[in-house]
Length: 201
Ligand code: C5P
Image (cartoon, rainbow, N blue to C red; front, side, top):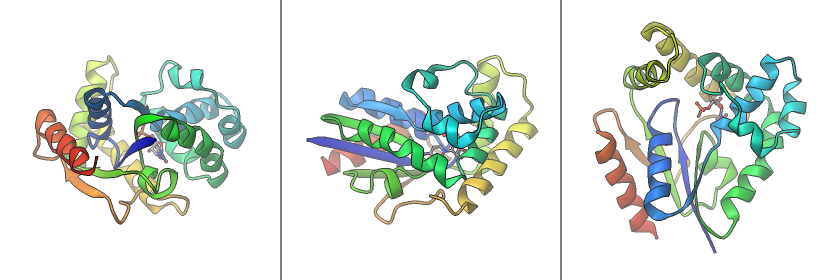
């Protein structure tokens, strides 16, 4: 039987860190679904049609260089508003979630659209300022030249677009447990997430 943990939330809320650590803790596989949209965004930046890029996506595309760049994130967020792009990526995500054993997926619509039957749904949030600061430190640590203002603008623009779009907007599932990480250390956030999963397994 499959056991799925669905994690959604805005950019840099901590959902990726929590998702990866939860998967390691429970021995589950992990999928950062933002990478699918980033891979499509990168192909669009190189001249591809977004819908065709999404239909042609293969697992190796998720390992392409440069997917973490803020320009790619913006291109991803624009492509992600196109219903046909989202539809083309559903099967890959569901197949990942429903193979035997446990899986953790993080994104924007995992609990609402991709895995509405997930045993655990988490909605991870933090204030835009906290999220922008985390993303800024992460980008600088990985050698990107960005300013704090630029990162805050990127985070706010993507939040606005991701929440306002008609196709699978960013929002908590009705049965999601909310976890605000603004004031939590990584260890404290992870401990809270582990406790939520254990209660439901
Ligand atoms: O999570 P990440 O910041 O890598 O996602 C990049 C963009 O991909 C998001 O801003 C969002 O527009 C889109 N996305 C989405 N649905 C998902 C995951 C990501 O629309 N499940």
